[in-house]
Image (cartoon, rainbow, N blue to C red; front, top):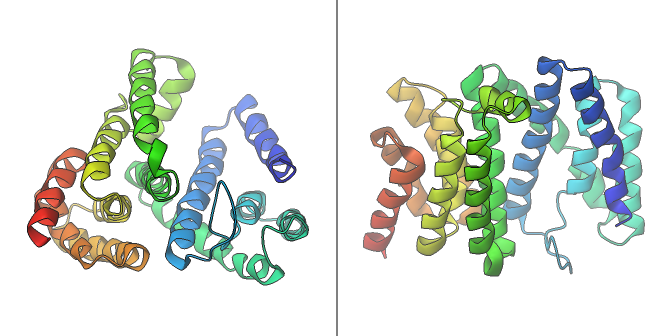
Length: 275
């Protein structure tokens, strides 16, 4: 509980930016939060540095430290490095990390910043994919750590999605939909959850490939770049899951128009044939 107090300054800054509305600043800040979630979860599941925990069994990298570094990345003020350092030290004192894990976690800060900057440079589609990768990796993490309740959470998300769709013209909801959704209706996020349910019954680990392959491949409409970005996503997926079947994902991605639904079905068929 003490560690979560470290999130208060982050939330206060987010609220202040929203209160003095500046869409560019607000969504850049929000993208940094999403990008940090995406990279941190991916790295945790990739390195599998275990610890005793009822919530997050992976000790490296330190999620608290990296989330705290969002202020540093947003304001680009080197003095703000003190905040993630203090948060990291607190985590060491609480016995959640070693000092080496905290120090090495700082290596991910430039990776996160570059990742978010690269996707933001792709315009609205890049912003969509920051949200997609972060959301899909959060679901993949839930499958990995909280598998027993994952299906209930996904159905709850579907219900929440239907409620938000009904209120899609609400000013707050509309701002997020206009920025992160292709059609402004939230259909992309809704179908992502539906696709996640399919993966739950087929092979939950494939959700990592859905996150990264779909997240990167659709940045371009050029088939060569679709495959290039897709295979970069496949490499990341393989490093996390150690499942070589995922290298078929970019080809399936290139052939599948409604990827959040048809891609899980197609990969499910391939998975059962492969096994």
